[in-house]
Image (cartoon, rainbow, N blue to C red; front, side, top):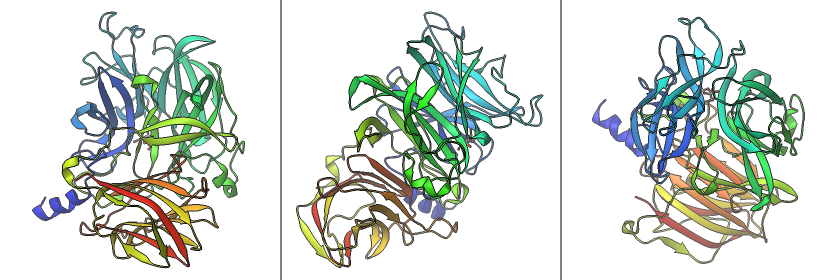
Amino acid sequence: MTAATATTADTFRPALHYAARNTWLNDPNGLIFHDGVYHLYYQNNPLDNVWGNMSWGHATSPDLVSWTEHPVAIACDEQEDIFSGSIVFDRDNTSGFGTESAPPLVAVYTSAFKSGSAHAGLQAQSLASSCDGGYTWTKHNGNPVLNRGSAEFRDPKVIRYDGGAGSYWVMVAVEATDFQVVLYRSDDLKNWEFLSTFGPANATGGVWECPDLFPLPLDGDSEQLKWVLTVNLNPGGPNSGSAGQYFVGDFDGTTFTSATTVTEGLQDPARLGEYQWLDWGRDYYAAVSFSDAPNDRRLMIAWMNNWEYANQIPTSPWRSPMSLAREISLRTVDGRPRLIQKAAGDLSAPSSIGRPFTLERMEISDCTRVLDGAEGSVQRIDLTLTPGSAEEFGLIVRANGAHGTRIGIRPAQGTLHIDRRTSGRTDFHETFPSIDTAPIQPIGGSYQLTIYVDRCSVEIFSQDGQVTMTELIFPAPTNTDLAVYAIGGTAIINSLHVDQYV
Ligand code: FRU
């Protein structure tokens, strides 16, 4: 690699998000908090920066913000690729892979069997265990432990169910091309008994992948425990390509029953906007939650990319970052249970970086105004906006004058959008330069946005975390302006606060 390409790569390397040092990654796998450390395993090509040789890479963090990369945790071989899955702490040593006094971590992953294997062409669930806190792993010699003879059975998420029906392990996985989540139970992680299926329901415009199932109190009331089933799908997202949807309902230990299903069976594409999405942007996929997060927090990380163009994004030598870790909760909004999301790690900006930029109240009218002193490429922006007569208003981040990534609101349409047509490099894939929208309604007459800008991404948490949008951008390193704009009339910036991180 020449010095010039190294410099280019560094301009996109995120400061607040995880990216592998010099390799490819996709889905987060095996997220677990154990012995005071957050473990992030992930789909990794240890040999290249495009998809292939699928193995589990590994990173750890004390705080969900600064990550240390470790050697590959579970490597592919001639028999199998190591596809997505999860990790549980087997504290009672139900699997027998550890001892009572030193219980193991157990990884449940999909073996994608290759031509060298007796199971060639199949996908089945397998185990590996670690007795050193997650740094080295041994594959179970009885793999696979759950084989349906299917070529599309993958992405097991295992949870501990402790409820009315008893106490046992539950696996949610997918039959991807049937648009179905399949549920199994086990006492020892090795023998699995079929419980039920869920789906097809709501969005079915692409294969179902990487499901998750977890309880959350509604409106903070532990008496009102609901179960959330998340399902990622590719393609078929609300703005094209990969995305994640969720259902809220009940789980009785056998069956998940959704209270938020809009359409059963195969989807009517016209109804995409009615479904519940984990994120409305183009780059938030394969989201899964941590096992054993402290204080009952439900923490999620997603892959910040989209299969439509994932292998072509212009970063090198690494390719694809993860999203920020998010804390999610469940709140009743307009009579419906809805996920509320916020950044989970401690993202307070270092005080050494200079004074934050603040603006109290400013009316803008049919203009674009660059904010002197607010420039940067790794920022947290907090603002509230009140509509006036403008048909559209918002911010331009990573800008050079009026060129940049537009984050806009169109009150009459009820939409929030990210317009990345002039965001920087867009030429690597024809569908990348897009305008992507999410539904948004004012609260008390105004709009609240918290935006993390991190060199190659924008992650928006709006209306107190009710609507999120996450997208990649590839601006020139010199495009650091922050501007506000209004089109066709007036808008009021009530307050705007910018923290700089680097
Ligand atoms: C989702 C996915 C999973 C699979 C993995 C392979 O992005 O397709 O279904 O396990 O990636 O890398």
